[in-house]
Length: 343
Image (cartoon, rainbow, N blue to C red; front, side):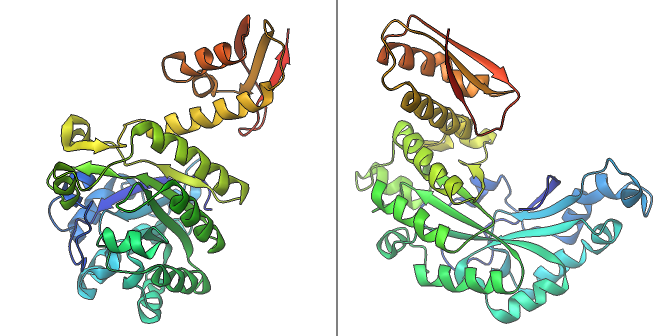
């Protein structure tokens, strides 16, 4: 993966995409309703471009920046529009050789000529919305592509030297726990540089919303999604693949009620990581004597994850193992480590 950098988002709404998936409402999810233009790119880059030419590379404390086209299927846009947006970033790329461009698209909107063109504009990272590697789930979700399209496009992207990010969803129509695990395993085999995991949210006004109202779709509960995603994160982490996003990016519309059902939560990622910490601590506490006094040592800044929302992990572990006292302390250790000490 690329080193830590500033992300500069430009949202490309649902334009050019050849399909409308049952879950899709890009206006609500991205917060944008009009097509992006070169002027939007200039406006987004203005805080970075305000420095004098050459200033970025002379500031040793400056982080590289990444212009990220989010929201729509970028390569499904008319080629002239794609080129206009990418050309608008040329001065930004010239400021610092570490600056880069990221875009998101569909697996069936990638071919060799497309990749060659993106390379000329110095696009560095391409995100593909795989969503599932089960063709029945893709069909029921009206994705309009198959799992073989994911394999084909991912292979081309890697071969052309781009960084590859893959996105998957859980809880789609026809999906199950086992199918989501299967999808994760198939994505691992494609060796992406990172993944995003999005539990399905039922957004007001979508086809999925209608299916839910008619009783033809049963969404995941928040608890089920948290548990499943904790398992999926473990699979990706064991394979050395970073999970760079868990859950939809929260916005006012979703949080105010447009997410009418499903596993939307503004702090979904924290719930998942808290669940992972709890599961690891639970496994390490197996066999501990009832009435023990236990100290769980976590990396600095990770106390809240170990404690859990409203101290849920503390209550769960204390009750399950009949502990007399349970404390959480921080120490200088790897971000992935925890230790159990008796006192």
